[in-house]
Image (cartoon, rainbow, N blue to C red):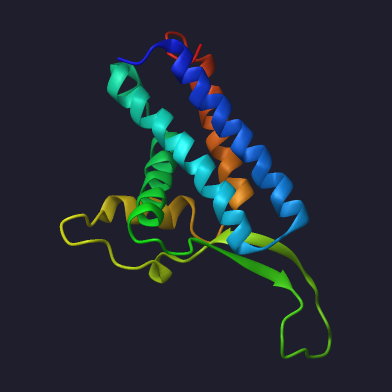
Length: 165
């Protein structure tokens, strides 16, 4: 069983990666650069979620949107780690061909469509993870998803008996 300071370390590391993601998006708005901080935040969030699942039986009984969101994040983290796809893309800005009227959409780094990810290795298909990804992550802004993950951990932190409190 992990010691409590390790839970706090993982939570702090997640928040630090989320801050770096925001700073990087403010400067670059480029999918490749954003992916590094995105996957770092996803790594720490998943490490903490998996540790809480292993160490706290009451955490496994939680319901609501949080467990599905974490399942979706684990799914995309696994894909990025094992198949190495680009899991985020840049949207908005000016795009060719330019037509009238000119509409400039804000530049946002979003999660790619599930169909854009390569197939899982044989024996590692994850239909539930795919469904959670489609429902909670695909097409959304990376920052929005990470804010939701942060809120999930904050609600867990305030839950009586939580290993994060």
